Image (cartoon, rainbow, N blue to C red; front, side):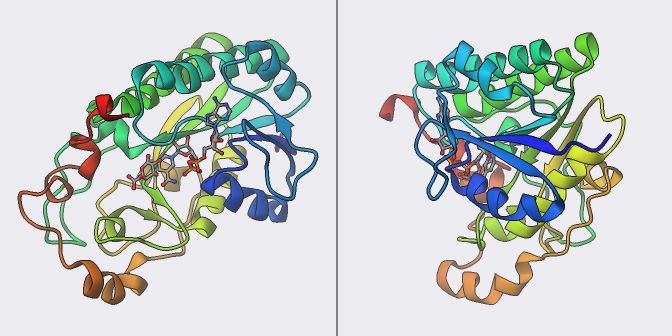
Length: 270
Ligand code: NAI
Ligand code: 15L
C-alpha cells in the first residue's frame, strides 16, 4: 500500500527544505524532525539521531521514513560515528521495532567518490554503474556505505525495504562546473523520492540521484526502474556556470574522481 504518513529526518536542511515543500503535493502527510528547529514548523520534533529513545518515538506510527538527517559533509570520525553511523542504526532499529516497512535513505555519490570519473565524450560515453565497488572518499562517504549495508541487512533479515539514493548535488541550481554533471534539481528530487516511496518490492535498491543532465554519467537505470522520470537538465545553466568557472581542469580532483574535492579533504582539519 502507498505510504501516507512519512517522517522526514533532517527536515531543517537543504534537501529537507525542498522536500517539505514538495512532498505534500504528492499526497503525503509529513512529520518533520531535526536536531535544530525547522523554520516555520512549530510541530517539528527536536530529535538527535544519537538519542535512541527519541528516534524510536519519532518513527512511531508513520508508514515510511525519508532519512536525510546527519552530517552532510566530512567531519571528525567521532562526529560521523554519532550522527551518521549510530544514527542510522538507531533509525533502523526504530523502524524494525515499530513495524515501519519503507525507508528512503539519503546516501551519497561520496560512497563511490574515489571511483574514476567516466571520460568524455558524452552523452554517448560510458556510465558509472550502480554496482561500482565502494570507494568512499571521506569518513562521511564511509558512513553512507555503512548506511547502505545496514539497509541491505534490514531488508534481508526483517523485510524493512529501502531505496538508497546516492544523491549527486541537490541544490536550487548547479553551483559549479562539476555540478553540471552531478545536479539533482529539487523537483526531480521530489519525483525520485516519490518513486522510491511507492515502487513495489524494492528490497534494498541502490539508485543514483541526478537529473537528466546532458553532461551526466550516472547509470539511472535502477532509478528509472522504480518509475523515476527526471525532467530537468543542468545544461540550461551551462553557459552561465562555465562563464564563471570554466571547464574542469585535467588532473584536478573534480576531473579525476566522482567525488571531486572530497577526495582531498583532510578530516583532521575539523
Ligand atoms: P544539510 O546538512 O543541509 O541537512 C542535514 C540536516 O541534518 C541538518 O538540518 C542537520 O541539523 C541535521 N542533523 C545533523 N546532525 C544531526 C543529528 N545528530 N541528529 C538529527 N539531525 C541532525 O544536508 P542536505 O544537503 O540537506 O542533505 C540531506 C541528506 O542528503 C544528508 O544525509 C546528506 O548526506 C545527503 N546528501 C545530500 C546531497 C546534496 O547535494 N545536498 C548530496 C548527497 C547526499
Ligand atoms: C554530498 O554528499 C554533500 O552532502 C553535498 O553538500 C554536496 O557536496 C554533494 O555531496 C556533492 O558531491 O556535490
